[in-house]
Length: 332
Image (cartoon, rainbow, N blue to C red; front, side, top):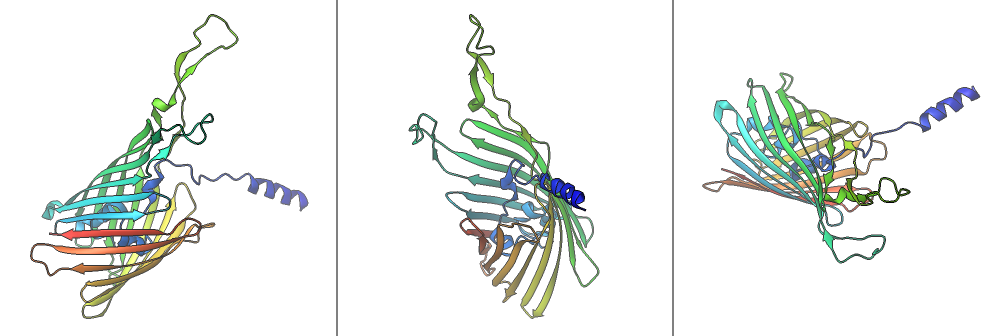
């Protein structure tokens, strides 16, 4: 028994996880205050321009031109911005374009000789540019795909690559429950390259008379993208005329962490004029750093040429500053 326990403990201690080992991690930061307020349980609800992030099949249900701009204030000076437009084309389906940009802001260049700074500044950022297409296969089933170019920059170096997201939404015959599935960030590995990796190298410092200043480059590792499989269900409840409640659950299986569940709900009042939302992120995830979310939305459809919606969300973090997200949605 003692030997077995020792072997078990040895094996357990030597387990290696892939947490924090993927590139372009910004792709896992949720966009849109509506979805964020609902704890990220949005894959089966997605029915606006932010669906291109959560589940591209969602834009198949969009029947009017939409544009959305969101801003998420994170910890330190980091912020995430998202822009998306959707163009419905009738029976041909719906087309969309989206941009995600993570900005970190300027920082001082420091070295071992100048730990307080050299006087130079550098910045870093991450970007994704996507094109989306979705269509209804039947009245109850839709599919969509988002193809995106990804780039991460830091000082004079960068990494780039391509990936795609694919999703489906099915309105089941069981009390109108929606079922969704999606795979996001599927693509080849990324590797950082650039002038910052250029160095002078002496291949044999013990040998006199050779070239001591050969131009060389450091070789960096390649890292996988943060691939994620997501399964979601949701149900709408009509409370009484002009008021409804939505509840949603999403199960997530990422390649760089353990599985977890997001849950959320939305109460819409006065024909969607006012919406109150709440949720919880990363249920059942050990050492989770996320948790409670909530927010609200105001949507007005009474204007002659367009409709407008304004949304806000709050997300609680365990150790870092809490996150605030704002968004404006326009429909024409």
